[in-house]
Length: 173
Image 1: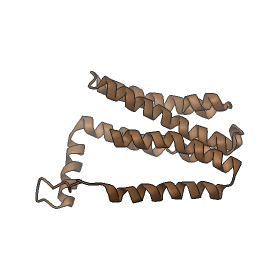
Image 2: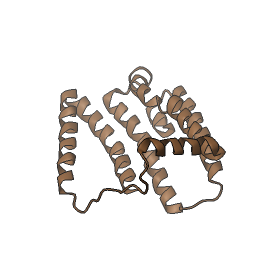
Image 3: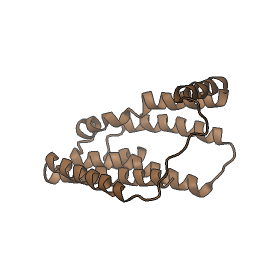
C-alpha cells in the first residue's frame, strides 16, 4: 500500500513539474530532471538493509505455478470475469493516456503545462481512491463497486472526449 501510494503521489507531482519545466525551459531539461531523480532513487537502493529474498513455498518450477494460476482463472467464474474486465479496461480504456498529448494540443489548446495537469489529475483520482479504500477497509458487495467503477470509467472517458475545457477535462479524468 505504501509503495502504491508513493508511486501514485509521484504520478501526481511529476507530470505537472515536468510540464512546467518543458514550458518554461526546454524538453532537454525535463530529461535532466527525470534522469537525476531516477539516478538518486537507484542510488538509495544501496542503503536498504534487512531485505530478505522471498522463499518459494513449493519446489515447483515457475511455469507450473503459472499453469495452475491460469487454470484457476479459467475455472473460477468470478476471477475470470475480473481478469476479463481488467484486460478490457487496459486494452480500450487506459490507452487514453497515449492520446492525452493530442487532446492537450489539438482540443484543449493547453500546451506542455496543460498536459502535465491532465496527466496529474488522473493520478489525483487514483490517490484519493487508494486513501478512501484503505480507510474504509473491507466493504460489502465488492463486485458491485468494481462494476460501477468500470462503468464510471467508460462514461467519464466519453465525457472527457467531448470536453473542450481544460479544468472540466481534469475533473473528468
